[in-house]
Length: 49
Image 1 (tube, rainbow, N blue to C red):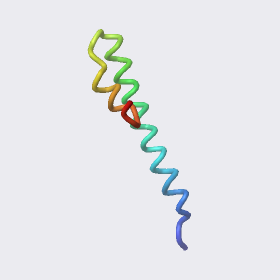
Image 2 (cartoon, rainbow, N blue to C red):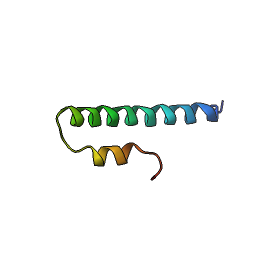
Image 3 (cartoon, one colour):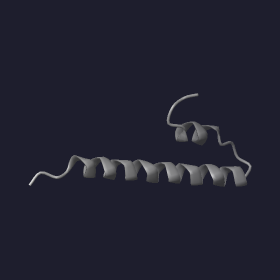
Image 4 (spheres, rainbow, N blue to C red):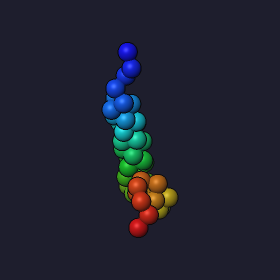
């Protein structure tokens, strides 16, 4: 039986969402420590401004 293609898309989306959440947590930690957040902010943005 062939798996549904939406399931693969869903899994990929969940993985990307987890990565973004981790980067946001790292950025927030840097902000609390007074460190630069520029690199993390750029990495989080899906499209350049």
